Image (cartoon, rainbow, N blue to C red):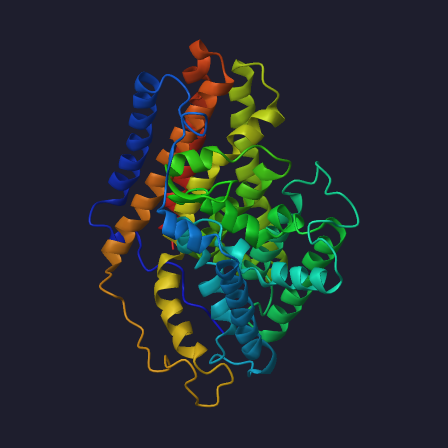
Length: 439
């Protein structure tokens, strides 16, 4: 099965010259930086001044009930079981919706859903539910594992799991075939359930790559469930600013950003030609390319944060953890720009195929007649959307980095200390736009 290309827009599709779009993006970052330096003179995000507006009492009672929780846990199990019908019993051919459901509806679909409603995968995760059911059957506390969760573990398991997934999605041979998807998912499920058995249900928060992925993006959601269970509206920037440093967090966010950049690179004619002319197998070249791109993105981030930290005599490792949250909106901007057309077109096709996971001519969901359409989108419109979301992501990242720098660095040097971060943002913008529109 060959999934559709992630982008349909190109440089020639922009209603303005690509050079003008690139210059405009860089100018937007520079103007934002200058305005923040003059007008934003003290930390404002994620602290005591952060305010929320609770929903109505009726809504609070509804979402706080056990029935609400059970509905979503059951939904996660039902959807996972339906997915497994096509995975286990469906034919390994292009009409099988499994690859589209996994790579498009699930992986890409988690982006808009998490942006709107928060870390939804925590409520839906069938592995978390299976662990809960097993714990109850054994009359054990699901939060109590055999061992305490080490403080130093942090997001490292999620970072490793995310890298394993993007390698599967972008590099693995026959990655859209049922045996490859099934083996990967089976191994992943075993590892996650084993981790939960050893460390308890808290393992999923930072050990499950998909919960961490949804959780990072969900920090930008306009709604939040507070620690006391109250659901409220909030400033999305407060949500992202509330992401605190943890071991492995910088690597996790960089894997998310760097893998998307590699995905754009792998579709360029130059890279395709390079791989075809190489004496090494394509998977080896792809793996090397993925590691190198992620490594370069990580090196640039660590270098910029180390230079920024020198202004405040802050340890580079600490500075990288403190500023990792500013990379999340940048990564989200790239994800939306890169996967928009894939989700729009291949998502519709997958919905139609999901009505018959066994390819028997049945129409279980009533969507078999779904016709794939552009829904009013044009190449020029898509290209402009891609540029816009990338710029917005970088501007939000600049705001978050500025606010955190004010809290970490001496006030008189806070703006100057952010210059390496500004250079990093400009570099990411230029490379991102070049890669996105190079295909």
